[in-house]
Amino acid sequence: RDSCVSDSSDSVISSGSDSEGQVYKVVLLGEQGVGKSSLARIFGGVEDGHDCDETGNTYDRSIEVDEEEASILLYDIWEQDNSQWLKEQCMRIGDAYIIVYSVTDKSSFEKASELRIQLRRARQSENIPIILVGNKSDLVRSREVSVDEGSTCAVVFDCKFIETSANLHHNVRDLFDGIVRQIRLRKDSKEE
Ligand code: GDP
Ligand code: MG
Image (cartoon, rainbow, N blue to C red; front, side, top):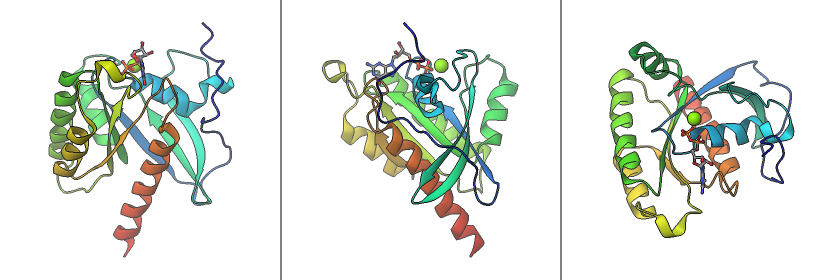
């Protein structure tokens, strides 16, 4: 299968950079197999032939959200190796986080909660934007985590929530638009 070819109409395509030249670092967290790399490749526009390197794991793109460009550097490095150092780096570098679980895997959902707690511990006083993502929403019959459970968890953890399907490209654009809006909101409230 050629991973660079896709019939998506939902991909995130743009060029140019943020008016202020600022790049937002966004880090993907979550258990193996939940779909982080799939989401990252859609964001990175791999299917548009921009970057077909499967080992590449950061994606640099600008997207237009609410008529304003935002430059995002997306890190898909959480599982790159098992070193504690890398995990700590991941927890430190992000301006925002996407915590992914699979709606077909309860344990990945529980892992997502753990990650949220770890993140809070690592960045105690900071109010970092986080989106909790229930991926694989297309797999209706093997669902183990309901939409309600996901959104309730997000309320408890004080973060946003969205369900996506990387396979169907469903809500993927909304996810990345959402993270940009969250970052802008926090930034604006800090500046006040
Ligand atoms: P990662 O380990 O979190 O990076 O997960 P991957 O992106 O490598 O995906 C793991 C597996 O789940 C792959 O076989 C993907 O094709 C599959 N997958 C990812 N997202 C979806 C989705 O939304 N729906 C379905 N049905 N499968 C998915
Ligand atoms: Mg991966």
